[in-house]
Image (cartoon, rainbow, N blue to C red; front, side, top):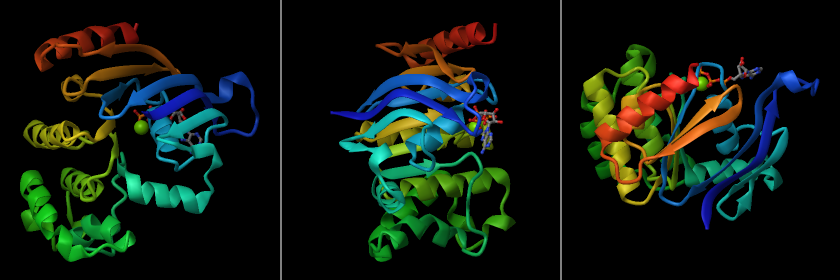
Length: 248
Ligand SMILES: Nc1ncnc2c1ncn2[C@@H]1O[C@H](COP(=O)(O)OP(=O)(O)OP(=O)(O)O)[C@@H](O)[C@H]1O
Ligand SMILES: [Mg+2]
């Protein structure tokens, strides 16, 4: 079964349904279980809007989204909240950390919300903290951290639950190249163990880790390229070529 099926999805934030107000226009694609997909496109092209729909944080104006065997359109608010808690890890573009909690408690929040035993996640927390260089930050509060540090805490929070579907909006946007590589390695490990990833990114280097890149332009899928058996370096070159086309 496909992990995600996006059928004829359009989205407008306005009440007036004139054609020009559509931020997404007739988007169609399918994501197979275990795929690692990047979404690229200019600022304002609709990438975050699309991720929010997939994350059940917002509803399409037209069209349908099927997540596994569930149709998002038919979920009520409490069902979609349960769905997010049980299946999704979301790394937001704005990190959405809670300033009243320490970083440790922010990372463990999905566990607490799922009413699971926090103790069972100590090893996972330590592992992610080590890999993301967060060990000295766990007792601090988000407002005491730099943007890149907050982004790493947000990544740890999204991954603590080992979610089946990871949605990441510019997860490396605030990180330097060596920290980006660490986060990309972690995402790669998750994908190698079967988790499905959709990642919005402006970075061709980050995208070269995935298996397919969707290019969005003006709210439609303009192009998509598959890695096939290319190395990261070869795929990177292809992505840069395709990005040039996008900007013409
Ligand atoms: N809540 C909202 N209400 C009204 N318009 C919105 C809202 N959110 C986004 N938009 C508009 O929808 C369009 C697409 O925005 P979106 O955030 O999806 O872009 P994006 O591709 O993620 O851009 P970026 O790369 O800058 O993050 C933009 O023109 C934006 O102004
Ligand atoms: Mg965005």
